[in-house]
Image (spheres, rainbow, N blue to C red):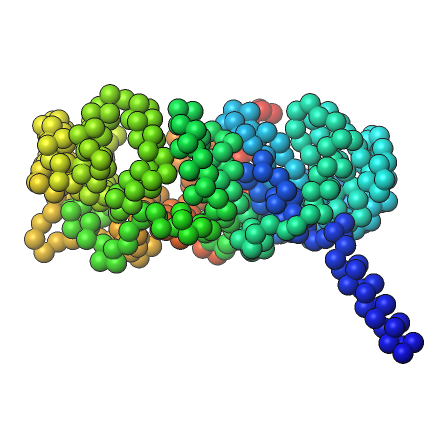
Amino acid sequence: MKNLCLLLLAGALVLGSCGDPTNRTLEDNLSAYLQANDKAVVFGKVDINQLKQKGGIANIPIYGPIIGEVLKGYQNSLNMDAPVFFAMEGPIDLNKGPGGLVMFAQVKDKDSLVKKLTQQGFDVNEQGDISIMQDGDMGIGIRNNLAIVAVREKFEAKTLLPQLFEQCTGDLSVDAVNEMLNTKSDIVLGVDIDHLFEQSMTTMPGLAAADKKKMNEVLDDSYTCTGLTFETGAVRISSKNYFNEALQKFMFFKRDPSAKILKNLGTGNPKMGIAMNLDLTKLEQFLNENAPGAMGELSRNLGSGATIALATGGDKPFSSLLSGEIGAVVVGEPHALSEVKDFNLFVGLGPKGKAIFGGFEGMLSLFMKKVVLTNRSLSAYSSDTYAPKPGKKMALGSDFSFFGKKGMTAFVDMKALNIDPTTLRGEEKLLTLVKNVTMEMDNDGMTIMVRAKDPGKNALKQIVDLLLKELGNELQNLSL
């Protein structure tokens, strides 16, 4: 009996230590913070260790050893192999940035980290088991295995940081958030759509309070997660939607495995293109049920022409005018007296579309070689060479075989554009590394691929090497 009691006591101690909310993983700390903070709109992580290895940072001449020494100074204090997690608070202003930024790092040795920061000039104040430091708009707090860095205007670290640590000890967020925080990518970015709509620039100032409330309800517990990964020969940007059932039923991207739109986009070898296949009735249903006042706000923002067009559509302002199929491709070479390349255009029309868009036929004919208006579509081709012809079809490379098959697809064949590298300046020269860019989007998410001309080297290493080369050239020019 004595041994059994000791065993149960030991088990309780083990379980108690595992469940200690002040010694959680970084993922759980951020998850609890997000659950407790309705101002957090964007969150995620950066795998600095992966970026350092893929970019070959340690091997950069002169700078590599310096960076290595700086990082080495924190190896005993921080877990350098763990990602840095972060959250941005609203409102988000495109000019000023987020209302606040909070970062989370894993601590290996609190005393060592406090000592290191003290050596760098920080004054340390102890509040219970939290060590707190502040320098202007940045505050640092350390407790057990967690360091929190807060950046915002006009705040007191000794007041804010204890609150942030307390938020990290509460209940964890929903499963979708926890899954996003465990996504395997070099950089992960999650967005709380409800909070973003409620607090940021996406909120329409003219939207009625009742409409805003309905929108908040249908967007509740809905997220998107985007991961950026540097691969061998490519950069991959993948997003996944975590929408609630109420929002998911309104998703308006359609699939078309046969890519019928290609038949209307003519022939040739396109250098870039975009195609959309949308269920506009679902978009109308979403707005009518959740934000009926949004249509008027939208038309006012787009101008008088849009107001007339939308009013003509009655209670189906989109689907009565458009079918949801829209596409354009750039083909051919530049004209002799212009930088505009030949292009083909297709717009699917709804039942009332011809009456409204028929006026564009004459205008398009001024600079397009062939314009075709029917009851169901408006097509235009800048050259007869690339207009539809019996027995001919558009020639797409293997990287672009997906084009036209999902809700939104696009591509740019950088190699075929033959951009003169001597015309590029600064970061624009990164375009010389790119073979092509592709984008696919449907109701589940989106994938963007940036493929490099060099398929055998990590894309981040290629970027770092080019930027270092350009920096060296600039320094050399300055010394001349």
